[in-house]
Amino acid sequence: MKSLKRISLLMTLLFVCTSSFAQVKSDYDKSTDFSKYKSYTFAGWEKNSDQLVNDFDKKRVLEALKKEFSARGMSHVESEADAVITLYLVVNNKTSTTAYTDFNGGMGYGYGMRRAWGWGMGPGMVSATTTYDEDDYKEGTLVVDLYDAAGKSLVWQGVMTKVINEHSEKRDKTIPKNIKKLMKKFPVKPMK
Image 1 (tube, helix red, strand yellow):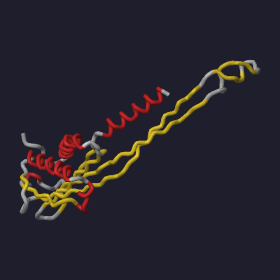
Image 2: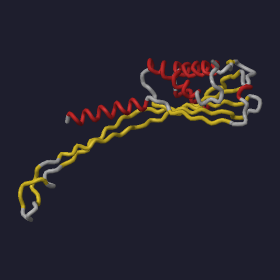
Image 3: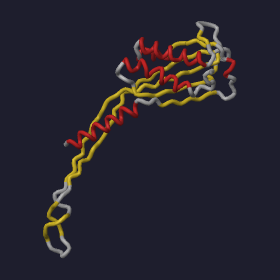
Image 4: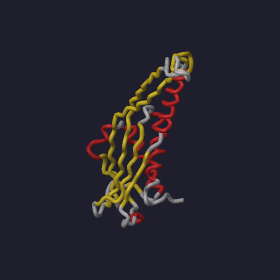
């Protein structure tokens, strides 16, 4: 039973460690000259998806994006910007299932070499017990769209998917870190 608890603990730790990493991807219009974008504005959250996140986390996301765009020479303005940014958030409830099979083999009564019954190793008294463990968690997907303000066309999209950390003090550090990871996919690199 101790080994079952150890395996369960290791699986939980493995899940927590691997789930703390954000998966990021992006796509962009290859014909766009991104160096022409010197200013941007936030057009808000699409389809009221900001209602899925509290005000503190909204501020964390916006501040992290401002910092990353600033590092790329872009200034945040309220109007008449070169680029317009919209944000979209989806939160899904997920369940992680782990299984552990405890196999108990041993001595038993079985068929021997001389075609006679006797004691020995064999298929007798063998059992297996499988235990399932389920963990519920929330997974969030943040989509950042950058539109050309003049042409009203989408020129870059960044998508980040991550398990949501339930502890706000950790989100204070992980949100900027993950936004930075997402912005590494942006066509303009930070200035030195």
